[in-house]
Length: 261
Ligand SMILES: Nc1ncnc2c1ncn2[C@@H]1O[C@H](COP(=O)(O)OP(=O)(O)OP(=O)(O)O)[C@@H](O)[C@H]1O
Image (cartoon, rainbow, N blue to C red; front, side, top):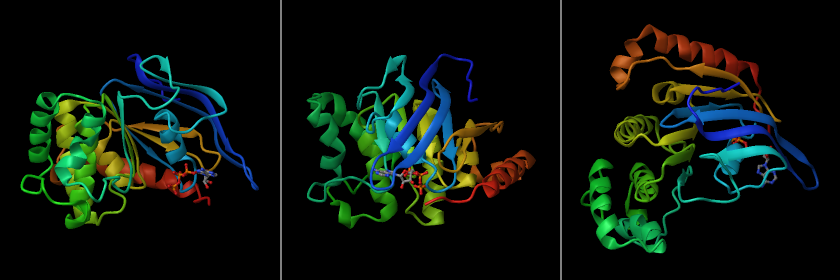
């Protein structure tokens, strides 16, 4: 399952994860996946099947009990600068401005301002945040806050982007717009992306491949290659008959699994 011809950047083999507690939860069982350089891969699966857990394991934020996880051929032992993680709600500090928040990671890593400042300028433009540099997070719309959160991560130039429902809290229109922006940025910078989403349309629009997980304990049970031309635009892609076929195939697969909680 999930074989990729080039040497994988992210490789997960037979990973097991059980949360201990009053009621033990077996979250993941024998998860396999491999993601090649510059690929955009999405994970779909019923609620509670372990998608976020899997992403956090790859990010080095959550330990696991069995199997192997490697990034660029090295076993994941903890967070690493080559990986940037974007969560559903932005983790910007409310007392800092947008610019200060976006510069924070670079400052903490003690990178010289001459390196990150021009990059920040470019990102502000790309993300439509010009003119909002001195605003505080609460002065931004939800969509802008999430753009700034993505900017915070991109400012660190990660080779790999892990995204957990980054647009899940936004209205449909804003979400569609940010998907277009994300794709534009990815087209330019070609990070290796692993995205967790609940939206079949989002997964099809953005991805090279979509992985479908089973209900808990989650496993990757299906992999669909999205063979749609790039660059993709929402208007033209929806006219492609294959788009509808992928949506239908994934909808029927997702219908098989019940949400678990
Ligand atoms: N820290 C934790 N302690 C105990 N159980 C946990 C913890 N984190 C997650 N779980 C459990 O593990 C299972 C998988 O959770 P996870 O958040 O990875 O699923 P998900 O597929 O991302 O769900 P959703 O789509 O609803 O966000 C769930 O049953 C959840 O309750």
